[in-house]
Each structure stands twice: as structure tokens, then as C-alpha cells.
Figure 1 (tube, rainbow, N blue to C red):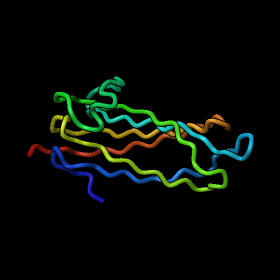
Figure 2: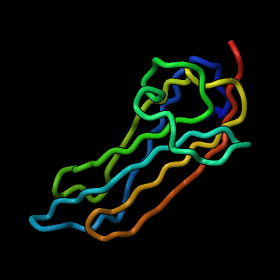
Figure 3: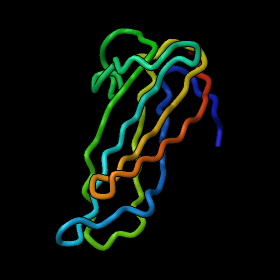
Length: 119
């Protein structure tokens, strides 16, 4: 897959979560945190819901968290989301995805670098 996008082009992210511990009643739950930050800046946590789904002014970071509750028997949990790049300035960005198991307490994170060009 390409890691180069034009400003305004949506970025579709797909991943799978494995190894979640079941809680009472067999439910598996986790928190998913997504952060996009300019590669030359520190993570600020700014941006919020507005940034990921459009609207607002130009910026250098986006951040959002989700609490997920997949079906009780799901050993593998497919997840996907879309990032609206319209509010981001052109440049190099770091996408960080962190998943924390609500019952087991374990946490995993991954990072990707991507480039956003002007339109």
C-alpha cells in the first residue's frame, strides 16, 4: 500500500486485534487510541474528533480514542477507520495506533510514517 497521499484524500486503515482476554461472560473489550502527528513534532493529543472527521482549520495533529466491545467469541477482531486528511498541512506524519486490552491490561502499539502532499 502507498504511504503517500494528497491533502484531502481519505486514509483507510485496517488492522486485526488478537489475544484479547475474555472478561465476565466471555466478552472481549479494548480501547483503541489513534494519533496522527507531524513527524517533526511531539505528540500533543490535540485535534480531537473534529480533526479526524473533517471541519475546523488546518493543523498538524489529530487524536481520537474508541472503546470497542466485539462479540463474545471473537478471537480475531477486525477493525477499520478512515482519517480525513483535509485539515492537515502537507508534510511527513506519524500515525500511531495503540490498543489496550480492557480485561488483560496488556497494550500494543504500532507506528507508520506517511507523506501528505498539497493538492
